[in-house]
Length: 118
Image (cartoon, rainbow, N blue to C red; front, side, top):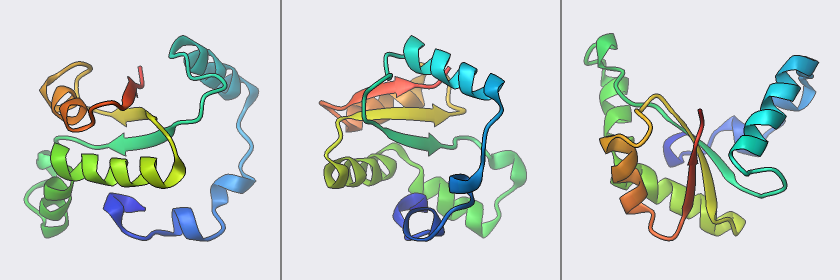
């Protein structure tokens, strides 16, 4: 669920089940999976949005910013990894690869293999 909350993406039918991707998209996905050594592995895919302050201090953005802090987000990831028996996270984020935010999240997830999307 979004930020550790129940959402339709994990409890109800999703439109994603009915979508068919173009062959070029599937080829690119396979190439990235191979590049990141994820082919054949089970992993948790997580999207971690950072730095949306240009939208202003809207109450929802302030709440999301708090929930997206590394310790809070790591707790959500750990909970899902444990429930699903996984040890690898495929991280999609706008945070800089290897930057402070990504290092802070990795420090909160010792023993978890992390792979950042290109």
